[in-house]
Length: 445
Image 1 (cartoon, helix red, strand yellow):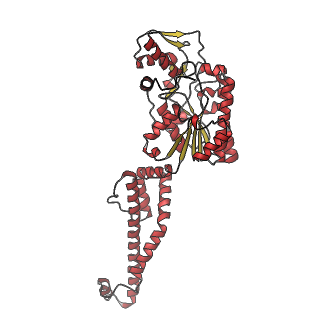
Image 2 (cartoon, one colour):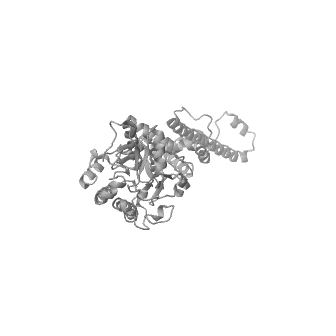
């Protein structure tokens, strides 16, 4: 708040300086241009009672006091008018009632008293000049940000551009440059990626590496060339070493090899963390990255074969209920995961873009104590879908990495007041959305 107070005070006083000087010059000329008080006035008559040697000193003191009073009144009027306009812009009020400001120190105190209003006003002024481009804007993550922005007044005023694959192929350098030329972003949230579940990652390691490397390189280099103010990219907890101690934190990304099941994707994503530092050191770019745990929510890809665990389970449960067949979960159900609801992640990502200034990546995750097993997730989906049939675990399928517990202490230190959506509530909303949009939602690769 102190920084915003100082910025607002500087902004206002600089803008009003010339106007104040003009007003005071007129005031001083009108009040003090003569040799003394006007003839016939009360002050003039009282001055006749003072011995002549002291009249000049008293007259000058009186004129000085009048100048000071008028100067204070001019400052009070102009600054009160300015605060009134700020208040009106933020809240729609016509004026700030009974606000008294007699000097610049008083103005500082007034700003502090109305700090939240000024903060919102300055935020909206800054947001209106931003062009925020979100790659991968039609996916689970991007649509969650779009939903969050639409219901957040300060962000809705900014110019948000959500890209999909129809806007261009980010693997192609010329198409990527054409997008930057057209959109002219000041900020970029880079979510576009080739993603998939466990079995897709195991069978297409080369494709996951090459395609993600191409996209990341093109986006980062274009952000440098086109002078983007801030780039926030998205990593994943699967990039952390397979053999490590738990919980994992942001300092451990490069401490060992990732799990072999997704090494193509993991190494491509790790390079974002490396290049963020390189671009910062060499070119002064403000690039950073978020590391979310497993994401779920509306607008996901509900592919059974190639999707992530929660959307795949939701789709399976839906079909089992519809067809009257068992609900089959691949694997033993014992692996542990931390899941974050997409709308929670969206809010935190926008906060990172606006307020987190470090190049170092930051984990966006629920606390460690909210880690759940795949079996627990499957049974919560059974409840959310009101499935009454048989539940089967196919242990012939691979479980993948048993756990990758992430520490969110860094996030908690910066956002101690943030409240995460419960798994039960988030899964219910995701299941309801899937059922309502079954005919049109994504269910393939």
